[in-house]
Length: 356
Image 1 (spheres, rainbow, N blue to C red):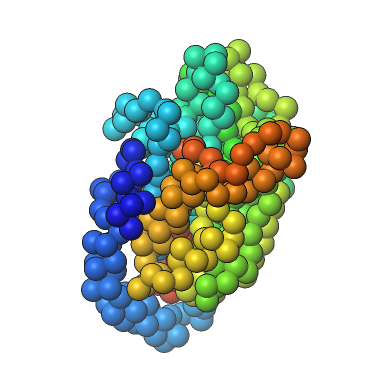
Image 2 (cartoon, rainbow, N blue to C red; image 1 turned 180 degrees about the vertical axis):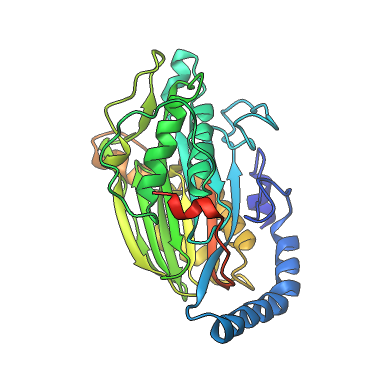
């Protein structure tokens, strides 16, 4: 809506998993027109893929057609985007990744750098981006770093496991030549492309929900030590690790179905919208194209953040004993949307068989 769009004071980005990080900015109206025009061809493509799976393969394979949108809070200074560096786009102190499907799984994630590091002159957004970049390396089966990784708990995990992705991603941040100081929440989701099992590891106050037929069928709860003090992974300035590890993450499992919408959000979204608000933002869209869904959820959160209407954050603040007015909460916002789609299988590269 034009009024909500006028509130946008930053960069909103959208990304296809198959095209890389950022493909540009478009209005919701233009996205709706494009999505409506593509709906028939997308449906035809899914039907053809399902038919090929039935004819040539014993199993039906799935994937995530994914897109992301992010919005820097007005109080945060613009970020320098580094083509070869960690920051893929200006999401304030938020970050995300959209993984490339491999023969077994496809993964996505979001992270929210903790803003209190600013008092120490540290940009926690760099840490959040490094964490997401390293998680994507692990999820996409990229080569290991040559520096030894620290022991962060048992390694007895299955291959399709977002906790493994979070463990190894965090370890690789620490193992880099100059690990950036900072801390971040993290939510990593992974779809098993053969079984359809969706597994999520969520640490802190970012989170996820799954929509099916405009109903919430799965969602996370926030992890906080106390009000506005979320669980977080960290690397201290002396390059030591924080007390919280990936093993503190809450783990979720959900049986996905074709057409499900997986929505990952940082607390900038969740502090402003409850589940019913997300459903309402999506319900009237002409299609469930991930770009449209991400943009609609973002606009709903932006509108609520500057309103004088109670939000999840304002209610929680008063429940914790703080004097906080009825209003939204301005913050960096990031949303990643993945629509479960039928897909052809991907032949594994030889080293995939040896990946633990």
